[in-house]
Length: 174
Image (cartoon, rainbow, N blue to C red):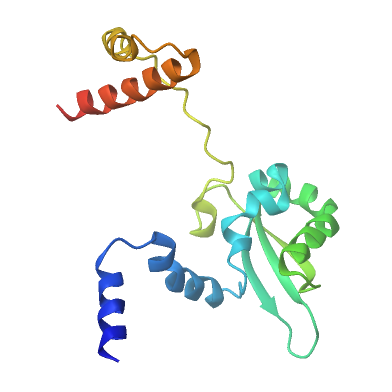
């Protein structure tokens, strides 16, 4: 019994995945809003599609008193509400595919101003990817010199990229 305890303690001393540390907290927060499957919140853009995810987000899943099926509440701005109303059935099918059964029977669209309420302060559109900066010519020449002498072109290119990343990281620390 002591061996099992020491093994468990040894495992817990090192690094742990963030998902493992935060999993119970995320689940509690999601369950407080009715989300039994937190994937609905975390992967909304994959589930609903990019177009729908840009104009909406899931806010709550509420269950009726005696009936089977729940109501999914989506938050959107006023101008986008008619677009979501027309796509309710497709969204419901996609969400139920995540659950694996017909968990959601209705979708309710809630409108809000783009800013103002706590739910509406979050921007609907996903962030744009930043364009990479041009590498410093000095770092590029050092990286080429590091990989100089390698015959394989593919290996040489990979080593140059690795050296450029290392040199860039080291130059930003100083």
